[in-house]
Image (tube, rainbow over all chains, first blue to last red; front, top):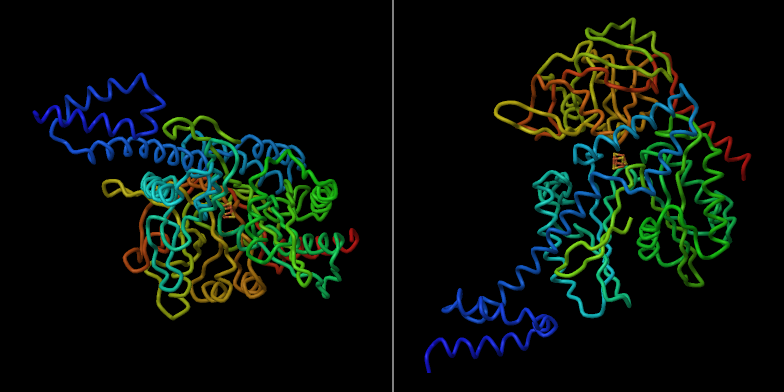
Length: 347
Length: 188
Ligand code: SF4
């Protein structure tokens, strides 16, 4: 038997074991032809690698584009509340001045395609995926995308070895980026990205109820008291006006993670739980009567929105975990289509 | 809107009050954690800071053929320099500090004693502020501390800030804090 024939036989076998080839029957022929022509001498392995690589490249490109958009363009729901805040502040005040500079900054970052804030933050990926999905493969590609996005200047060199203080330069290292995977029933993969700066992360807080000094008991009134306390403590230090993501309950770890996941919600939604929806509205209204204002200069807008979730707790614990997000609320998301191309933007 | 133009004068600084919106044109020097510690340890600055403004900022600077270009330059949190700032006022004669988040009682006292003000830049407005930087004129201690921690000598035009601590013992941060606490008491 000639070499050519052997190769042909092997190819057929290979292709029929591949799912993609099965689904796309019409293309099978051309692929086979191309293989016969170009890779007479190549082994099966090379062919597989070639195809897998092609797939991977698109995922990498999609993630780089996700990073670029997240770092440079604020989604519409966030821009809307910032514009409302700008309009609300009184002419001639420092609050109005701060909001107008923020507004100009948002526009400038978009037109120059440069990070709107130099602190490009902790890189948090939230991935919702169907049952058959490799977390390891995803992380490997996402890490590569982060390195490339850093080289392109969409991300600052922002990851430091905690003990030595040395910058790892490419935003990789233990805990960086931060990945959160969830299996869902849909067939598609959704990737959400949040870039959360240090200034606002520093003013986040976790309370254990009861809190005697705040006179906060284990009920919604106590929850309200500690949330307002966190807002008072934060003042303008988290680059307000900001948005709160809050989790009531859970353990300390789950509570903080859920508080960040609340920040993935659309700003114009409200909690499906009526009690929480009321509390969300009440917190925003009350916070905006405190007079802290943009940047803590004093003014009408202290909080742009508040999102509250709830997790079960142990009888012995009652945590309230609060994440503060600055006005530079960088979060975006994509749905991946065929070949992991971006098929839809989520915000 | 007030204007402050280089060379800066002590009387002009004394005339500024909390809440003033100011556009600064002229010179400023970046300096953050490493530099403040360095001066605190008794080292002399590599360039005279007399009557100058220090900006708490670690800029993102692009190096292009012996030329530097600032591509992002927002303020960093100032409170970290609280232990050192008053000393830099006393020993090196600075008359302005730019940063974000405000500073504490030691700095406020230093401002009154030595005739200095704290200017608040808009946190996160990296692009708007970078646009106001017209040239990078020099850089000091870059090898020693790395780019973000170096002293960058910048020429700026109409750099927008708000006076939040003046040289007469007034702090907008203290005022807003007290007012918001009082408001909360009423609302609870
Ligand atoms: S808190 Fe947000 S806006 Fe402020 S410096 Fe940090 S990332 Fe930027």
